[in-house]
Image (cartoon, rainbow, N blue to C red):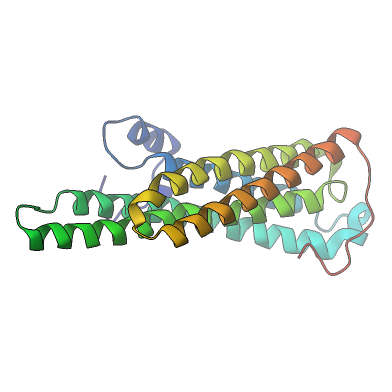
Length: 222
């Protein structure tokens, strides 16, 4: 893959073929971000199918917000797929640095710590973005086109899968960061966010399965 080419520029088949190849990137982190992007796109789709319909007029502010947010999240998560791959590539470069002398060993260790932090940031931000996807899907459940309600459930499930997958990439890089306090903090924050994503997804599923209609949100989904 051309280093200047983005994953979004590939066909689905090309991306999957690259993922299945022996190349180190894309890997699980990029796959997680792409999965989260699909969740964001589904949020935007359901909002698009609901905006401007008299039946959902009371929810129009939420739906307009969700349409824009879903599109932005889908775009952001696709960018995170590229960032994750680039960060992992940087870690690979650090791993190959010479370590024959004490100076080289020290330089390599410092580079590995820096690369590990970079390789942790992208999946952590993917987890954060997945929380936004799950929150938007939950907010629209019972407040949007019921013919597309199952797509909100899928959006929530994609957010859970993507968040858990990205969290796995966060966890695997923590020991190499060289900062135990920061690692503990990131571990706790990541686990808390994933718990919130799962809670919101479960609530979305409950509302969708019940078929209930909900009252308008005051002040949008935030």
